[in-house]
Length: 88
Figure 1 (cartoon, one colour):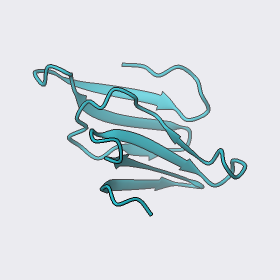
Figure 2 (figure 1 turned 180 degrees about the horizontal axis):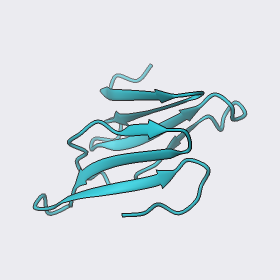
Figure 3 (figure 1 turned 180 degrees about the vertical axis):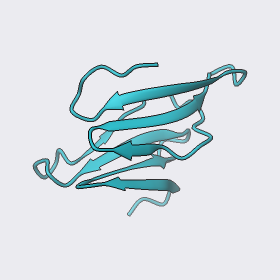
């Protein structure tokens, strides 16, 4: 168990996505029960920008809102959990 906050989980099939603060800022993580052990959890975001709203997950698609690093703009992101490029 990690002492940092894990927030706003969403479940779709064998996958769970959530906001995680284990590295200090907000990060989006995915856990996929269908992947081999050791490859089930992965980080979907890398920059620590604030994620003010819960993510959503449907099948192979994750969507989330984040604040730009300046904190002045809200951006919507979409990612495919199978590794296809994410869209903004």
